[in-house]
Image (cartoon, rainbow, N blue to C red; front, side):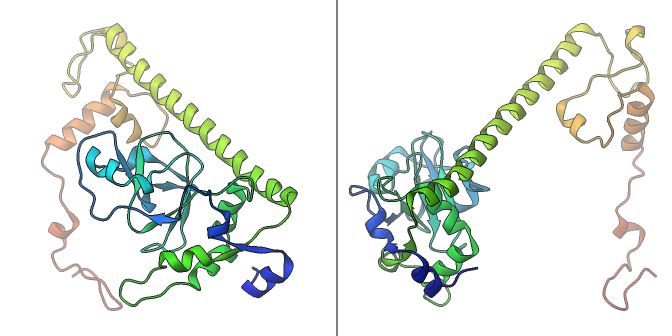
Length: 273
């Protein structure tokens, strides 16, 4: 790791307020989201997936609240840093959705002519970047970094070639993440299509009755995607396995451990009596 003085001695450092876009001030987001079923989203730190914000999991807010907080609108390439709660956690906005952020996040819209935004993202995600932010934490019960201090935090700005070398690794990881999600979505669609195709081609009776109406399909049973993920093996679903499973569930003989051992306890002298 590199301490603050060593960073400053190794390369030039500039405050964040000098590295932002001129029309995009460093600010925080909305306080008290007005939850609604809309397409307007509020990004939270818990929506970060590795280094990128996944807005599909974010809260939905009212259109009026979204439009009233234009200063906190988020666009692709923006970096959000936690200034409350999970202080120091950072994430990059990657999609075009209509989205803003909460009060515990700060918006950093870097000027690409002054700094590589992906390099800045990598720096804040490093141990040195996290420790730098921790130095500006203040407060007691609700500790955090106030915006005035955040704007004056100076980060190292090495040569353009160094920034590009670091930033390109982040961009490559982002492309690989997008490729992974594309293929995972394709696999999900294939599984659903196969399930639907199987149901259409076979005339299987009710699972659990011990027999099928189509003798040709006795060696395999089509199940829902949920049932598929609950199996730990890759074998096909034979009739007897499904039948036995249904019998066990309907037998009423499943008991909780607490019912079988009412005196169960833990600790250094615990045990079952």
